[in-house]
Image (cartoon, rainbow over all chains, first blue to last red; front, top):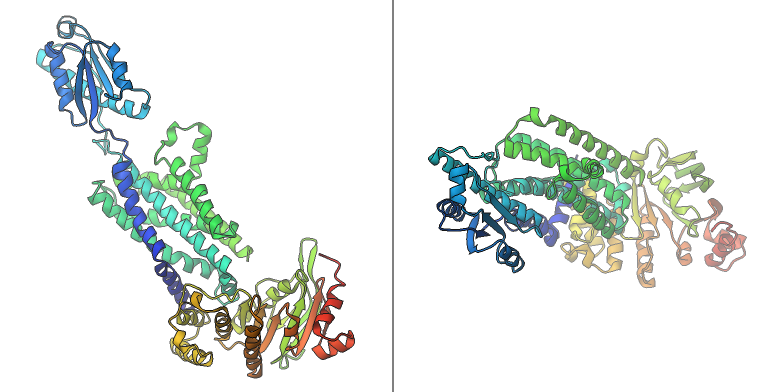
Length: 367
Length: 247
C-alpha cells in the first residue's frame, strides 16, 4: 500500500509540474462548453424574413406582424413579386421569404382557405429548415387565432411542442456530448501519453523490475486522471447548470455512477493505445484522430446516429461515448431513473469490462 | 548448489521466441560480492537472459535461483531483492532529486524515516546535498548516472543489475562511475553488469561472453586473455564474437 501511495504521489507531481498540460486539461472543458454552448449553436437568431404580398390585406398584415414579433424572426422587406426573392437570397439580404396568395383575406373568408408559400434558402439546408420551422410555428399560431376569432374552420396545422426542451436549445444536446468528449479525451489520452512517456524515457523498465505489480502501475496511473476527470465533470455540470441553464433533472448520484463507468472505459482505451504506441507522438495521434474524431462524429453529438446509413450506425454502436451520452441526456434532460437506462448501462458495462480485461492483459504481455 | 557463496545459479536456462532460440541452455554461477561482466554482441541473447534474471520474463526451460529465489516461481521476491539500472539512467527528469529518491524508496517499501536517512546519506556520499531540490533533468549526465546507481541501491539489494550503465558517457565520467561500482562491490553488493566497452571488462572479477545464445567462455579477464592468447579483453571479445553465425 505504501508503495502504491508513493507512486500515486509521483503521478500527481508529474501532472502538477507540467503546468501547461494541467492548464489545458482544466481549461479545455470550460472553453469547450462555452464554445459549444454559445458559438457552435445550431439555433438561428434573428432570421431575416422577406414578405411577398399585399400589406393592405388585413389578414396578411396580422400575420406579418406576428412574424415580426417572434424573437427569432424579423421582417426585413416587403417585395412585389416572388421573382425578387432569388435575388435577395443571392445577395445574402434575407434568409426566408413568406409569400401570400393574392386576395388572401378574401379567400380566407369565403373559401375558408388561402395559400401561403414559404421559400427557404436551400444552399444552407440545416439553417433553412430551422427557419422554415420557426415560420411555420408562427403561422400555425396565427391560424388558430384567426379561426378562433372568425369562427371559421381552417385546415389545422399540428401544434408542435418539444417536451423536455421547449425552447429547442442546442445546449441540451451539446452538454452531454461535451461531457462524453472531455472525459474520454482526458482519461484515454492522458493515461496513454503518461504510460508511453515512461516507455520512451525507460522509466517503465525501472518500475517493472520493482516490486510494484503491472496492475499496480496501471491503477496508480489511472487514479490521478480519474480525479482530474471528476473535477472536469463537476466544472462542466456547474457551467451547464448556471451558465447555459441546462437542467439536471435526474439523480446526480446516478449521473456520477455512469460517469465513473465511462471513465473506466476510457481508461481501458487509453491503456490499449499505450500498448500499441511506441512514442508519445503516436499516442497523441491515435487518441486525437482515432478517438476524438470518431467520437465526435459517431456519438451523436453533432450528427444524429439515426440519420446515418445502416453500416455507420453499426459503427456508432461500438463507440462507448454514444451510450454514455444517451444516458447522460436521459438522466439530465428527461430526468429518468435507472430503470429507463439499464439497456445502455449494460452495454457500456460490458464494453468497459471487455476493454479493461483486454488492455490489462495486453499491457502485461507486452512487458 | 551452494547459495551461500553463489548469488546467481543458472542451469540449462533457455528462452525461445517461436522458432528462435534467444538463450540456448546456458549455465553459470555468480559469486556473492563479485563484479560479474556479462558481455556479448548485440543480439547474442544478453538482454533476454538478464530479463529472466530480473524476474521480468519466464524461461522456456531450465531455471535457477537469484539470491536463493526461484526464477520461475518467486519472481516477486526476486524483484524485491535486486537493484536495476539501465543505460537510459532512467530517473524521472521532471521530478526533483529528493522526489526521485523518495519515490523509489517508497516503491521498495522503505519507511519515511528510513528514506530520509538514506537520502541524506546518499546525497552526502555523492556530494550532491546542494542539488537535492534540482530537477533531475537539469543535472549533467555523469551526476544523473551516479544518482541512478545510488537509487538502484536504496533498498540495499544483495545484487544490482547494470544494463550498459555507461553508454554515451565520456571516458573520465565512466572511470569515476566505475570507481563507484568498485566501492559498492567492496561493500559486499554483487554487481552484474553488461557493457560494450572492453576496457570496463577489465574491472570485472569474472567475465562471461555470450555468442549466439550460448556462453562461449567464462573466466577472469586474466585467464581469458591467456587462454585466447590476446593482449586485452577487446581481442578476446573479437575472437569469440566473430564466431557468431546469426545476425
